Amino acid sequence: MQTEFVHNLSYVNGDLQQFISYLNTHYISQNRGAVISTVNPEIGYATTKDKNYHHIISSSDFVLPDGIGVVLLSRLTHNPLQSRIAGYDVFISLLELANKLSKKVYLFGAKKEVLNGVIAKIEKEFPNIEIVGYNDGYSADKQFVAKQIHKSKPDMVFVALGYPHQEKFIHNYRHLFPEAISIGLGGSFDVFSGNVKRAPSWMIRLNLEWLYRLITNPWRLKRMFSIPKYALAVLNGKKNGKTFYPKPEKDHTKQI
Ligand code: UDP
Image (cartoon, rainbow, N blue to C red; front, side):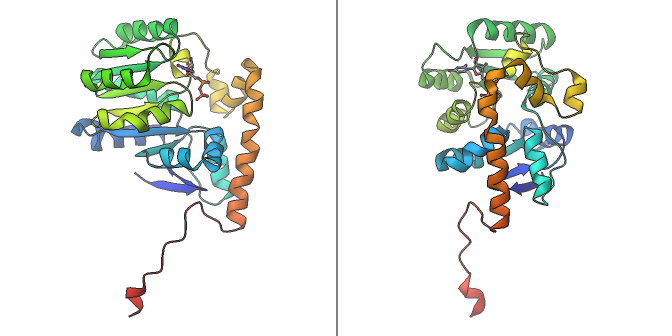
């Protein structure tokens, strides 16, 4: 799958369909596990501030540009990404695939009533999926949940704890479920269960989903301050020719 560096992360450069088809051919159909991180500018900015979090995100198998901000910034730095790949859309596509292939899934995160809504909807709309386990995101100890996932051997692990907790959870425990596709999904369970409305499709088409989320959740304004900060970090990095990584050592053997 083609990728492109934007500042300090290498993003998948394609659209949703290309990504799902690649994932299916090279991972799901071969029972190979993969970790998927969905990165918006807030998360992108967090990776510039916290080396450990950067390490966690960059060691994922796939980093998806889940925010029009990341796509626009990629154009400013002349490394254009083709399109946004929204975590929620990946979730739906993975459910469709899991249903088609009769796969096993584990659900971790969100409030109890939200999770119950997710389970009920999956059972109704994706009857071939086997839900081998679930846990809400507030009551259980993370290590306990990781062990439950290990025991239930799911093909896909959906973690909706919000960032950075979901990425840290997957990173810390992926060795217990190496053959699963694991993905952090933020607030996707809230949307899927109908507890939170996603932006109308015309807003999604016009890349205004962020504005809808801001209008419906004004408390997000503070978090959105990280968007211009991330833009500055990307532009400064470009101007100064700085990269997040040390320059590779010169290969002296070639000169001999
Ligand atoms: N959440 C959770 N446990 C926690 C904190 C949050 O399960 O300790 C859930 C929360 O109920 C919501 C999701 O994580 O379903 C976070 O959604 P949000 O849209 O805020 O995601 P973010 O933008 O932070 O990725």
